[in-house]
Length: 482
Image 1 (spheres, rainbow, N blue to C red):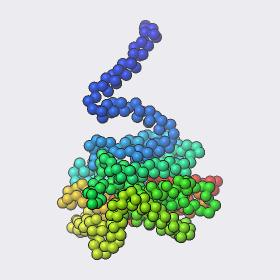
Image 2 (cartoon, rainbow, N blue to C red):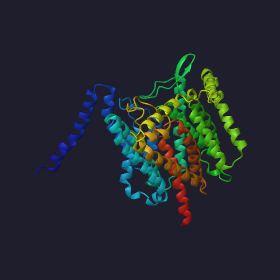
Image 3 (cartoon, helix red, strand yellow):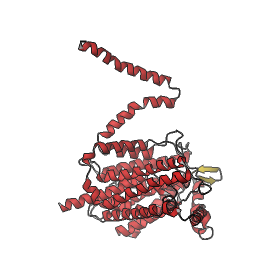
């Protein structure tokens, strides 16, 4: 029988042999990209192990990757592959391994909202079959991918609401982390516009036409400028809620005013540079909802909003005078010509909506089941692809009356949950509830001019705030009950 030392020799040789093979593979890789792929398992494995050690680390990593990393330059999809969905898979694994730590009572307390999220996801999933029938398997696979991208936000909501939590975890601390990540993204959006940096792997061709030529609108690290604008509107709503805490709760402020003031300037500047008029409407509606909910002095809020707009406008006009002149003319022109030339003001949306309405009149049976989620911009079933630029209309045609009805009920449940949290005696529940309630009021208005549920990189952030509001509210109710 061989001795132990005789057996240990070959085992000790395996390690150097593997290292040698790996080094040879790196050396033989023909391109820098392929060399990185060969080297990737080592750092990725270390990051995955570090992430799995704490229950909320994958969320922090996901938001960092989703908001601050561009797509990878691989020809997959119309925007390239992104690492954020891979982190979401890591989060799914984390939730599975910690299954015993899930809190079923939190799910039962928000049963209606959780059920509607799950039902809406199921409706989108079933619609993929109709995408295959009417548009072919290629479009159906793209539809399926977008369903799962929306599902990331649903999972983030459920995990945040009822998933494992570390003892003593602080929702305000995580919100501060989100704020700094978002601020970095907004700063990059401003820098990106000023220097016109090379666009990420995939991007929508959205330009502002100035005297010197076409200038790409600020999109930051997102696929399109409207996503950046919507994202800035969300954090401007956060700043508004944080800047006016209830009387006696200033000690519970999530951020100091020394941070809120430059944040207000940066997010407003990025919103202006994105040239998204609909996102401005979102901020206005959110501000009105805040005034209704908080009952603070209107004069104070208007002065704060007016000062921030004036400061951001002054900075943009000083650095980019030609763009600001164009932006001002376009914004006020939209108000001036809305009645006389509404289709031009709405960038041709009325023409698209009329075409989709004609399709439904000629094929009314599609109202029952739809033609497949997110197929309108890619299918030739209507004769040529068409962008609906309206969340409700696109859902009616793509998922049928059932999908639209469930979506409307889901939005009602979101507002109801947020409203209850905003009225909670808990400072944290009130902050997160008011934040998402005010923003979601504006979001529903912006959905009339855009397909916002396809903004998969920012939707999970919104749903995290919603879940945190529901969780903090239920935790407070449970503590009071006991």
